[in-house]
Image (cartoon, rainbow, N blue to C red; front, side):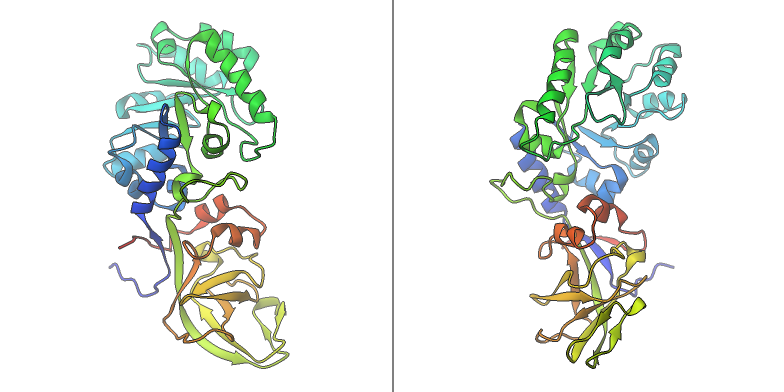
Amino acid sequence: MNHTSRLTQAVIDLDALVKNYQYIDNLARDSNTIAVIKADGYGHDASKVARALSTQVKLFAVGFIDEALALRSDGIDNTVLILEGPFKESDFEIAIENNFSLMLHSDYQIKWLSAMNPEFSGDVWLKVDTGMNRLGFHVDQIDNIMSQLTDKQRNKLVLCSHFSTAEQINSTKPVEQLAKLKQLVSQYGCKFSMANSAGILNWPNSHGDHTRLGLALYGISPVAENPLSQPLIPVMTLQADIIAIHTVKVGEYVGYGDTWQAQRETKLATVAIGYADGYPRNAKSGTPVFINGQIAPLVGRVSMDMITVDITDLNDIFIGNTVELWGKNISIDIVAQNSDTINYELLTRVSKRVPKVIAG
């Protein structure tokens, strides 16, 4: 039986999603803009995101093949790029059957590819390590890797690398990384992909044949120093309801560990969301929430299912009012800063017990 009593939910604005995609895609109009929907669409529900973009996006990207198969199960038939490539030799067969492109980054994957008979007919991408030092073949290995590919595989090949400091506009490393990749592109006459969201915005020379749009797709800018001509629109609004209101006296403590003490008579609202829902446990007292057009600060520690906020100075606040934890009125960046983490983590930590509902 499906029943929803608690009104804690993540509201997903698919219209905003589409507008963000169209805006960023126009910034790199000579490239194919890939929509990255790994980690369940950065916590936004990958299938809902893919369905909203399916007529505009030629290629989606996910982390591993399980995520791609989940899209197929939900009726998404666009081509999907598997960013971490095959984890098993049998993944090549699955890729052919389901129109998945595979990113190869290690020798064992090349051996699996070479052992296929008949040869793998899907699209192959090679991950080149230009300085991230996480995944990929060293630049000096590419000639050897190329010799192990068939003519058909080389003709469709895309060389890919990943910036480590693209969000830092004054960094010289992105220029160095791009130069390494472009040298290989020139040498082998391949297509290439370098730019993630920050690369699209900060490093236009990196746009190449394919860009990989991740965080910015969801309405959050990965760069602070590059003001956009059109503001991105947050796609997710995390919200919950007030379930209790009470007053504490001067000197009383609030929450586990007695970390916050009332310095005045304080009116508190208890909100039905906590760290089990993905709201960060280490959010500090003072982290803002939005209620009825007003800002209230978090007080005390975040519990598993609840938080408390100070509404002493607010007007017309009642049980049942909706509280925005982040979204269009409270920047997720502010919450992340107050929680010693990053916006990516907050988005992807929203738990399964929080329903994803479509705005409107």
